[in-house]
Image (cartoon, rainbow, N blue to C red; front, side, top):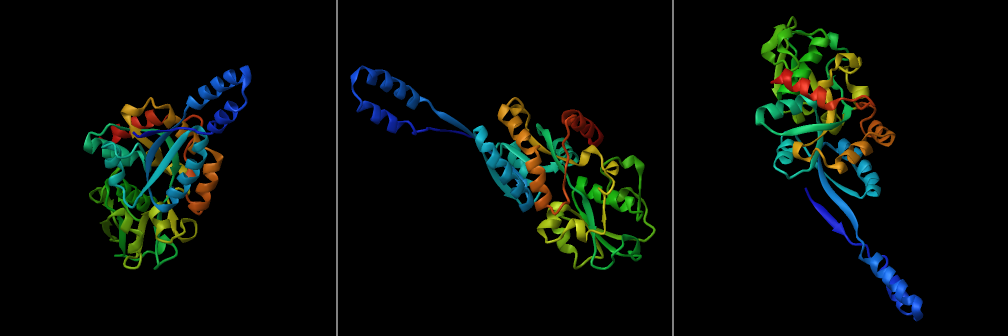
Length: 304
């Protein structure tokens, strides 16, 4: 979106110094210095949208390493999931990195948006938290449960409850079930849907909350220690639709700088920072054999 050209003035002192040397050699030297001073050092500037302080910390580290690539990456932090895609679609952002493929597919289908993922970032557990029980099996009949109210994260929360054996879901619901797809609820759980950012903050008022990691961490929870059940204990239970990705507008697919951003993110340095700031909860989702475009096409088809 925005590119700023920064002019390097490091050679100006040389121009003045050479001018004082005199003789025939000074003409050649002055000419060379003038030519070099006319050269510019171009820095491309972009803005990426993220959600949560942990993601901001990770991208701060990535941005610092991109400076050597001539890329200035500004990071804009959001507190909820709706705005970053709208901002990317309208050109306010150049990239965003906060969502899994299922969430992106739902947005693209609902808004006829031309957004696409270009590289995986991490896979984040969906965790169940409780101040009432230490084992999810001990949840009492009629217990109150709070889950996200958006289709994809709410659907994943329901799949977690099914994985824990608390409910059963209609297989025909696919990757994004809703509460209407519950076919068995033997404990008569009272399931309430609220904005994803508010889920972990409902812990004092509910028997169980099922939350995204970024919001859990921002609320002071440690997914590794505090969650009583997570859906990533066995990654085979978590499909490609829940891999998070870096997303751009399709019209920018040929921007080589964006591939440099992906490469800078998909590194051991990033993995180390991620492990530190998410308390070991988030795991790198990238590999050498990724087919992010193909997997996104499959998710789009399943959610359309």
